[in-house]
Image (cartoon, rainbow, N blue to C red; front, top):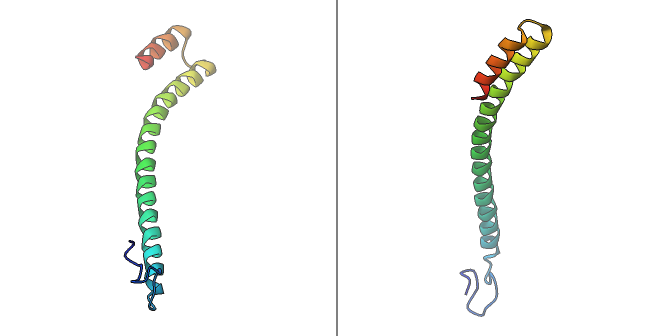
Length: 86
């Protein structure tokens, strides 16, 4: 039987109804903390993973912009692009 059942099988018999409320609040608090921790870890590792990919994209974007503005010629663009894609 559940620990909150009384001797006659009734839930929270004998004026201990508040134990059920405390139990429910602690249960909800536990899951809120677990979800909070999981979300924090997900955000931390997702941000690290996303920043790594965006650094590579940023370099390629800058290279394309410089080529589009005419700062570098096609040969230099292709050689630098090959280095970035390695």
